[in-house]
Length: 491
Image (cartoon, rainbow, N blue to C red; front, side, top):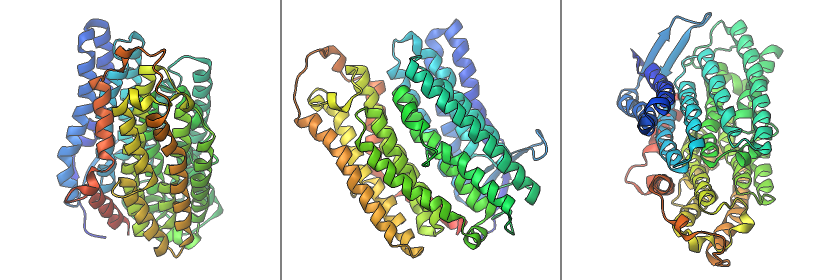
């Protein structure tokens, strides 16, 4: 491992603090100066993203930004920004801006929408805190905070279905928190440390460490919707607003993937995991998630539920890459984090535009909707083609590297799972687009004035649709370069 220069910096703490201040500022603005609320929300999303961008050159040169706060014993709070952290923070920062803009358009002129932003900004703060954490204890604090702040967004519609989905998410969050706590206590008891960046803290196996490993899988598996811990997600996505579902899919789910990367490489260590073979537990569950999620998506007529089950399969790709323990598979995992965020984020935003304009949430009701909303459905189609993994779209690149990683691990049968999943993706996504453009063209019960393009909603949709392929046709695939740098750090 190359020599790393550690630079003390307050930037990670400031990045996490700004969205929290913005949440408080939005409350004050709504009370005293309502016309300023939107500007406060945008500032709370844009300023952290700018600080992350400014930090990127320093980290890209091989440095690590570090901050230790001697509070909350026994470990204190640590922030540590390495190449994996900056990659995830850039992604989260970008999508925070996109989703903030979209949410302002989604809740435009709706009084009930203002409370949404009081929870949106803390969720963003918590997610950024997770990926900027320097030890397991700090990650635990932000992980729990993020999850608790997302609970009101699941129940935000205040319908019986939303309350039920919110309670299910809340109880799963409690289970994840308890599992995380016990895993952390066991790790600290054995290793006496919880810090990242040391190439692993564990040197010898024990039954207690296996219990901790399973607890880690439960904790981050719940957040990443790993089968059989996935059952909160379809209900939550169906009951929540589309901006909240997009927030979870593009950002929050990825904290589960990030957590497992840290557990595999910074807590247990690559050589230890290879020796004991515990990665095969995750490998098996990841394959089950890929196949199960893809098959279940067929049965869903609710648009968001189909996207949710598809998301279970897509996150399965990322966890598969972690479990293969090869450098190419890690490249595929890290790149797929970005590719999935653009693809599935675009789909959820399209679902939101369709709902706001037509009130439709059932796929069976969307025949001919492409003639009414051609831009929205074209963006959805681009995302669908990306999901299948057709070049030059992003997900082709991630599946390619996952396939190479499978060969590295001497598991060529994994290629068959990836191909099967691609076929199933095409089978449940392409008919939506075909029926949207070639189905019936009835316009009854739809007010034509509602079908006009609304910039705050449509610009984010188009940005994410373009992002599904723009990196692969650029002279330099910048996210792929970063993904390779992350893999080099661990391998």
